[in-house]
Length: 149
Image (tube, rainbow, N blue to C red; front, side):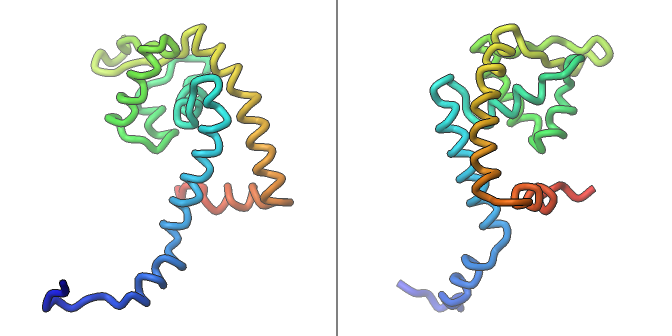
């Protein structure tokens, strides 16, 4: 039932559907995420877990803030994602001795082994996508989507 309130014409909905950059980027991101999720499912990871674990592959333990910044993720979301990986024994956290309120994050040996198993999968799928996007396509997408600083 229609109310007496003015409505937006359906043609406007179609226009937004067809032209909204945010919608198109979100749809592309979900499609890419699903592709990597499917590829990594046999080893028990998803694309988000791979990215998080890769962000911990560094010579010194990572702070929560540095990982949040890198992954453009809020602290609550990162904490929830870390709990899953910690329960699986892939990541460990320790109190930051420089700031007892903070945590330092590292991969466990099992986490490094999992990341090593995931990397060839990521490399293969990423290579397939690069080929599909054609010469310079992937680089153009990366440049366009790079955060504005």
